[in-house]
Image 1 (cartoon, helix red, strand yellow):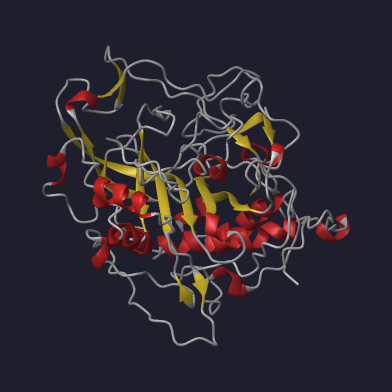
Image 2 (cartoon, rainbow, N blue to C red):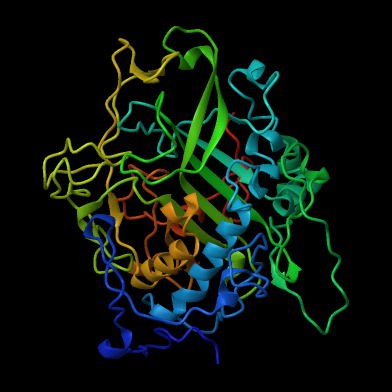
Length: 489
C-alpha cells in the first residue's frame, strides 16, 4: 500500500497525542511554527541517492510514494512528508557545495530565461561586457502583479528565472525559444509536454548517463550537461529566485543576525528605469531571500509538476490573522487583507517588515507612484528623488505542521552553513479532482512566497498550481503550467 496514508477515500489517519507530540520542538510564534508530530528520520532521507547520511549534490527525480489513486481533500501529515523530503533534497542538491557558498553552485550552470529567449533582451546590453566570472547579470524587478518589492533598506528585490538543461533542451529542440517556432508548434497539434523525471527500472536496459555539469559555465543549454540525479531520468526543472540587494557596508547577515547566501551581481537598467534617464550598470552584492523550485515527475499526478517554495527565515513576520494552508471553508480567506501582528519594534528586525503598520490593519500594500532606480543606495526612489520606504510585508499562510517539522530536522542537518537560515514554506501537488473550494485539486490548498507573491497572498487564487493552470504560449496554446513560453514583447 502507498505510504500516502492521509485522508484517502474519506478516511483520516489519526495519531494519539502522546505518540505524536514532539516535546523537544521549540515553537516560535514570530515565525509561525506550530506544534508538530515527532517522526524518525532515517539518514538515507537526506540524499536522493540514499547512500549517505547528509544532504548531497544528487537531485531527486521522482516521488515514488505518489499514488494518484488516492484522493486527498485535506492535507494529511504522512501524505505531505515525501513531498517535503523531495523539496529539501532538490533544494540542497542545487545549492551544493553546501559548505562552500563562495563557490559556484550547481544552479549557476543552468541557462537563464534571457539566455534562452532572445526576445527578452537586457535593458542595457552593455552590462554584459566584461562581466566578472561568477557575477549574476540581473534585470527583472517587477513581480507578476506588476509591483516592485522594496526592502526596509530602500532597495529593490530582483528576480531571476533559471531552466535546467532537461527543460532547456526541450524548449530548444522544439523551437519554442522563438515566436515563429511556438506558432508552428501550436499549429502542429502536438501538446507541450516537458520531460518527466522517473526512477531507474532495474528490469529495463541501462539508462544513458551524463557527466555532472561543469559549474560556472552557463551559456548554451544544448552544451550543458545534466547534474547528478538519483538513479533514473531527470525531469524538467524551473527555478525562480528572489534576490535582495545588500545595503552598503552591510555584512551578509539578515537584520536579526542570520546569515544569507550571497552572490556578486550586476544590474542592467535602461534609460526609462533610472532617475536620471541614463542607462546604468550597477555592481552590487545580492542575498537570496526567496526561491520557487518546480519539477515534473512521472508518478501520481506529477505530470502537473511539484511546486516547492523556500524563504529566508527572517524575511517577514506571520500575519495576525494567518490561516492554515488548507483553509477551504471560504472563497475569501482574507476579507480584510493580511493584518499586521502585535509585535514590538525591538522584538525582531525583518528585511521586509518595519513595524509601520498599526496592529490589526492590512499589511502587504504595494508602493504607489512612479518608482525609479537611483545610481546609489538606497536605489528605490520616487520621481522626486525621495527614497522609497519599503512596505510592511507579512506572511499570510502558516506552515503545515509536517513541513515545520521537516524544516526543524533539515535546518539542524545543515547547521554551520548559511542554509540553516532557510525554510521550506510548503510543497504543492495535485491530490484530488478539485472543484468548488478545492481549487484545481492542489494540496495544500494555498501556497505563496512573501518575496515572490508579496501583494497577492490574500487573493482567492493564492496558489502556485491555481495560477499556472492558466499559462499559455503567445500563440494561445496551453503551455504545460509555465509562463516562460509567453515572453514579454
